[in-house]
Length: 132
Image 1: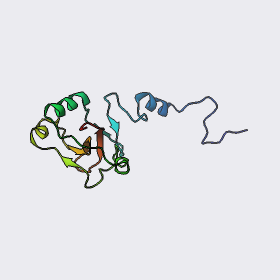
Image 2: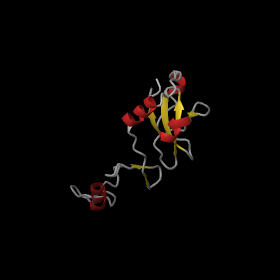
Image 3: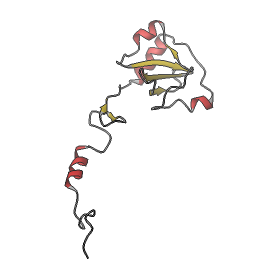
Image 4: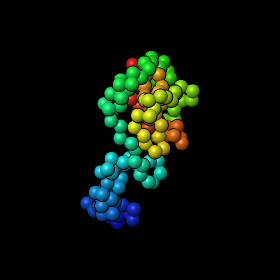
């Protein structure tokens, strides 16, 4: 019986796709830690040193806050747009000492500290209860 043109012979492999997999082409990650964006390119996301950030907040006696109500908290998630009207910017010495990443901003949302992409307002990272 003849094999259909779209099916490879038993045991045969597609060498191009295997080479692509070996290079990490379809894994979604690079060795550098960059994550694949929604387009075909790569996006380098900032690496956050959570311990250092928490020390900075304590050293400057950052204002304490209560957690968000559960319904709103569920909407605060990486990769989603920041819900409108719930975030506040840092001010004073804390704002000047927070790590700076071009194109990103730090904001406080309830007791959480959030790093967002400035242009799209998409949440990049959330430090839960950092201001509690």
